[in-house]
Image (cartoon, rainbow, N blue to C red; front, top):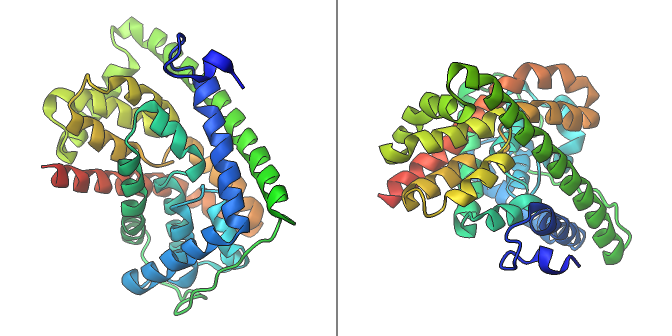
Amino acid sequence: VFGPFGDQKGPFGLILAFQALPIIIFVACFFSILYYLRVLPMLVLLMGKLMFRLMGTSGAESLEVAASIFMGQTEAPLVIRPYLDELTDSELMTIMTAGMAHIAGSVFGAYVLFGAEPRHLLTAVVMTAPGTILISKLLVPETGKPKTAGRVDLVLEKRAVNILDAASRGVIDGLFLALNVAAMLIAFIALIYFANGVLKVAHTDLQTSLGYLLAPVAWILGVPWQDAKTVGYLMGTKVVLNEFVAFSILGPLKGHIAERSFTIATYALCGFANFASIGIQIGGIGALAPSRKQDLARLGFRAVLAGTMANYLSAAIAGLMLA
């Protein structure tokens, strides 16, 4: 469709708008077809039952965490929509953390195009699921009685009438997501340059400030010290802005930092945990359960912390395995 602009090996190199964003549209279409064919719901049910047995969580939160492996932070809660109003605070925290700690399948291909290894991205989203439950329960322990304790019930929303309708709905959803990603990148990258312009007065920049702040954390995760400041900057960028911006910066670093550092950074960045996601969840989950909007706002910053810690836990495990 885009001719030489759509070929990364062409004369123009990587052009995000013509190469990465169309992948989002395709994957969203593909996932919509899988949902219509009941392939995706069955995978979610299988994973949910596994976590229900292994982690001892309620049926609702087990299913939602399983759905987050494949779906985004506003789509995954749809599988437990009837229970959202009656979730305990601990269950709601788990659901918010799951959204923060995972990535949507629709943006997976874009991160691969940036240079991230598919096997590491896949491993990261699966590894993070139990970590999500662990960290969220540490921050907000269960003190109530979950309505779905002891059972796992999958709720399916049938929107499409046939496979073509499912594909077209996926294309439309993917288009909105791609446009949203493009707009966020334009705005947030401009903000980085603006912040750097302001910080130039103090003879520093955002990269240096975030790098020094989070370099010790990156080193603890297993990043060699010579790359710790660079990876620390990426980790800070992911939380302050978003993971898409962080991955777009990580890609060109391939070959310039150690392979170990690149891999650990991939695990640490593989999640939606950032400040903007609080608003996304209040708007998205709040639309499904208006009575929980205040609870969503109250738990928002803790969910960002929990999601970030879950990603760092996966990165630390990856660092141990790489050793």
